[in-house]
Length: 251
Image (cartoon, rainbow, N blue to C red; front, side):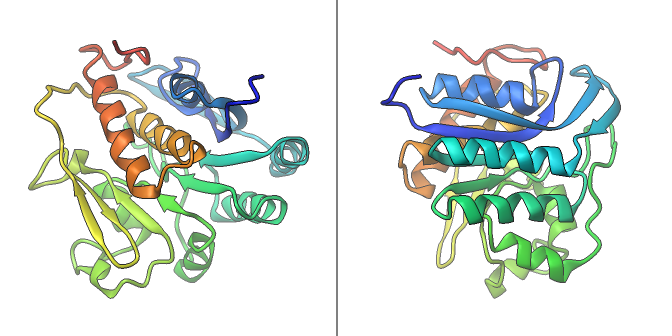
């Protein structure tokens, strides 16, 4: 392992196609010249077109894995993907913060598959708000943001500035400006506009974007820089093929 490369960790599901989850994250880490580690939260049966089943990793096993890696390595950034519950997510976050408070954490809140298989149910908003405060960046799309924070868009909840994490609102489902992402920081909102490059829909594109951001944070980029550069990377990835699975090496 190169001593010059920072380490990033993916804590996410296993997708056998490699289009999403820890395999997609590992490919993204490597392209950013970041050493990638991975812990699976679930094993799945799926293709890029169909989601069939999921088996969750026991929480105690996942926590032991996290403890083992953090006790042996300096991990600069963590990307978290699918989790079965808010409690599961909270235990992961508490463990990371206890072992390495400086580690940057990005959560890609995969709440449903594209075939509407539900991964996680948000039942207690108070608990969620406390948990969110442990995360540096959340990367929801327009559907997910309204599940996590009802009224964020429809009632302009974002103007109250009460959410204790930065939010990158992905623009793929933006009803008025498709492809324009919006970064909500504590005292600033930054629009990240798409290039004119034609893009094709991809299975797992949210995984790739969030792990690209985590890679950039591991490379000591600011949050704004990390999101801007990750947008460039994801656009090249989306444009790499016309199919649902893309190429991570994009000339």
